[in-house]
Image (cartoon, one colour):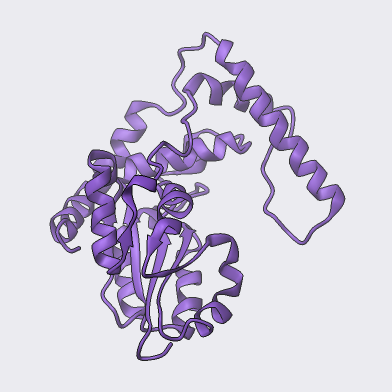
Length: 268
């Protein structure tokens, strides 16, 4: 990193509108060089090749946040970290819904266990205050905190705040503000989960190209989306996540969340 560079590192979190920002908003920014998430592996050379530019690097980390932030900070400690948070109960519910959509077979408690912390997501994964502290310790620039709820309440104002933070410009008439992903209903996800109990529909992580693995990945994805489409005919009224479970999560993390809202609502 040279003295002329300004590096902004958007670290996520997942399920906070990252895909919309990465695919629709960031590529339209002017006066800043944007490194798309699918080119993150080449971040070292990208930054080296833009010695006098403002640079925006964007990824979507969740449970990998600490490990990946450490790696990035080793090379670019003067980057400015940016994190987008979502109210914990809403965040973990959306993470679980995505997991079920991708073939996760377990119930909500096996995904997030508020009692014994035995779930796939750990209680520490929702301790956003500690994540901010970690970023503050790794980077010399202050952490910028955005809130997903602000994006939902006033998208234009939210995006304008990003533009000001990055000292960039935006050609607003060319920006596509349509929703990137549609949400699936409880009945669709429950139907898929019932099928996944008998057929392995789990999404696999991408690895080096292998024709058999690639074909299997495509088949599983096609089957999942076909089942989600068929599930629209289901008449089930069952809840994917009980309202009581989400209420308990909200109550457990409410003090932290309220404190973060008070501290960072106007930080940008």
